Amino acid sequence: MDPPQTVHPEKDTTFAIGQAASARGYTIHYAPVENLFLQNGIPHIRCRPFRFMNNPEQPMEFLAEDSLYLLDDFDVVLMRKDPPYNMNYIVATHILSLAKKTRVLNIPHALREAPEKIYPFQFPGIFPPTLISRKIQDLKSFAAEHDSVILKPLDGNGGRGIVKTSASDANFPSLCELLTVQESEYAVIQNYLPEVRTGDKRVILLDGEAVGAVLRVPPTGENRANLHIGGTAVQTELTAREKEMCSIIGPALKKDGLYFTGIDVIGDYITEINVTSPTGVQEIRRLGGTDIAKQSVCAFRDTLKDFPENFNICITNPPYLAQNSAKRRGLYYPDTRYDDLYKFSLDKCLQNCENAGVIIPASFLNSGLFRNRLSHYILLNGKMFTDTEHPVCLALFKQKSDDVKIYDDKKYIGTLSEFEKKLPANKKNAEIKFNDKTGKLGLIAIDNTVGPSIRFCRGEEIDPDRIAASSRSITRISVDCDINRVIKNLNDRLAEFRRETYDLFLTPFKGLRKD
Image 1 (spheres, rainbow, N blue to C red):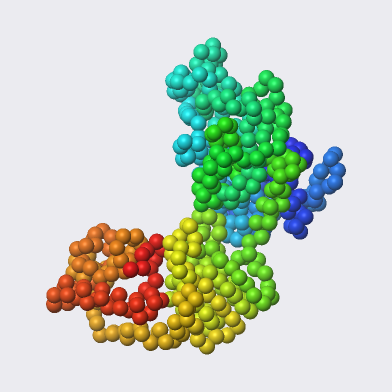
Image 2 (image 1 turned 135 degrees about the horizontal axis):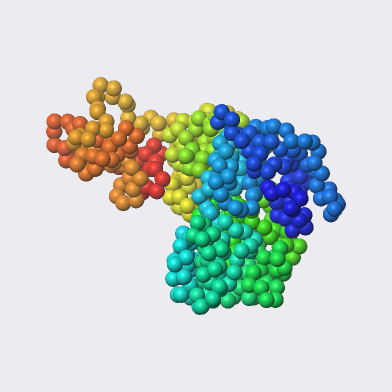
């Protein structure tokens, strides 16, 4: 965070989050960004502990001098540094991204990839006409297309350096020279939105969900509504349009690992998406809104790393993420051997609980994991979740299980051992060459929503460029017989096998049809 002497305890969001974390038992340390460093690939930081004081004159007290720590010594690191967004900031995010155990918020790579005045460009229709350039002629051309414009520095914050002007303003060229430092720095020019006279709205989102808002009304004679320059905080609610805009950007924020964000709304447009150190939570709470600082701290406790112990029953829907997806979202655990994060979560669950009811992908049965504790396997019909078409099941685990009872929704259909008897014997004498780009017999088993998800076909139906050792499209050499008859017989047998086994063993990949 920024230096403590610059903090206003009654307004500062970082201060409020720190107080909420302290109230939940966390020990709080402070460090400026420049105290981060990297040695032999391991991130370190020099920081010191402090406590909060009930004293406006001395809101916090340091308990020791700076000491050297590994970044992974901490449970959570909050990266809340005000702009400028420069090379020093980018290097700091690279160092933070090398933490293996510590949860960093917001996720470092997301901070790098989401500059606050550039990130909104991916949402056309809710972002006003805007140009970013360091060429004065570009700024002049843009201004000529609009009655009034707003000029602001690309790496500014808090309303600093923002001016309202127009192409007819005699000072416009000079303003462009100042903001671009004579065309050596980028500047932002944006269509002026007159609705700002009634206020701009700061909306706070946690993990892509709007949790609170405050209307900031500019002082008389000002076009800027920022609170630190005299803007007034007013209680507000989200309009239907604002809820719509939040629903548009929310999934992207969550996907990109931007857990704590603040958007600025003027009229029907989002003018900025603040990801580095959004403020406003204290004003929202004082005006009767959600205690966002407290709510945000509740998410710090990562149950995959700090699982509740000695419970009799655990009921959960663990995150269904492949390791590479989990790493991108900051939920990655390099010490786990599992390809899918839900298996790691399930492992932790079974280590700490006697019984468990877990909603997991239906393909879990083929992994063979935790078979001695799996007692019931219930196929759930219909699309359970909006973000995946992968079929899911309810798996029930207990201390020890001799066999698994299988249900198709509410209908009991047999035990796992009975179904496993239907599996064909492995014929080891068959010589099969996989991933042969000239193979005449093809097997399709790749993500596709058109046609059967797993089927045999003629080899030429599969693009040779898609054949690879890691591919789920494979071909193999044909036998000396009618290839069309072989394909028909194989697909007929697949269909019969699916019916006999209720599709337990040929569960499709994510997004696939089951026919």
